[in-house]
Image 1 (cartoon, rainbow, N blue to C red):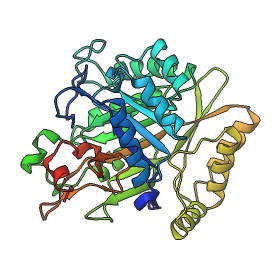
Image 2: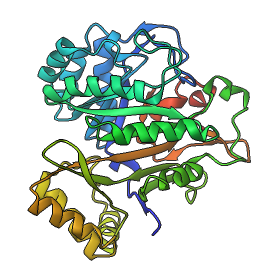
Image 3: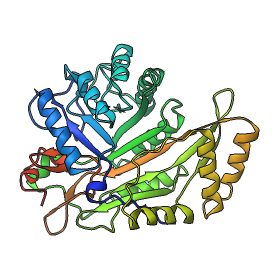
Image 4: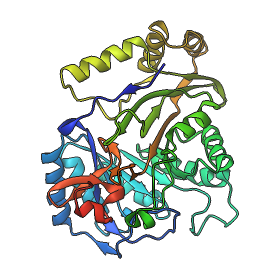
Length: 369
């Protein structure tokens, strides 16, 4: 089955980003932040949050940078978002993440934290010859600190589909990582050369190639987003999977959940009546099992019913193993910028929203045309 097209349009997009600081204590390949170090004042952040709420019916607000934990008022920023009735998240390299920071940010209302740790980064605790398992060992320890404070941990990595072995090792390490249930994969793009017009889309944005690699591990795409220039070409894709976990903590089964006829009908209703689709849905064990069973009975894999019955009769835990793949912008054949439509990671630029990865480019100044 083909993925469902997510029904997010206009103000109904439930997420956006606030860029709170520039400067970082880590060096990553293909970083799109290119402005000199600076700290955004709290009052300016408050103004940008108001702009986000005016431009979108946001439910989740990401706090990003640079490295946001370098901001001296990061707890106040998290509290500001939380006190607006929104779900705050944090994108961090995790170097400054420890029990003290986790407790403080949990008290401020942080909902989930995304850790970008991977081979190739220049950071204190990662050797030059680090493997994906080394990186996920750090992520697992960071997620454990987060989980102990009631904050959900997410893994983030940048991959190049032309280096398939490297991308494959990250996927395998994620599947072995018990403490991390979500992986966000961004397809590598050298944004330093973007303004020079060197990032062309002629060879494809990599999402299709990544989908074939992901399929080797059992995942099938669930839903996605197209481009602002070509809405039929996927640029952002989600994959839903679930593990059964025995009393000894080992994985005993894995269920992939592609879109069923029932879910397609639900999405169609959301689209028809302009109902805002939630950005993230949390469900307990029984809600998750009910979803897997209904998916199987309405066109999904029937073998997933065995997964459900095994989880019930063996009294096993069920945990998600979800994946997101996204392509960074490039140029379309007519020389205009192609990016996700809508961009779920948009940030405030003046009086409008632009993709966060484009905010330092000349195209942001020209309205991303």
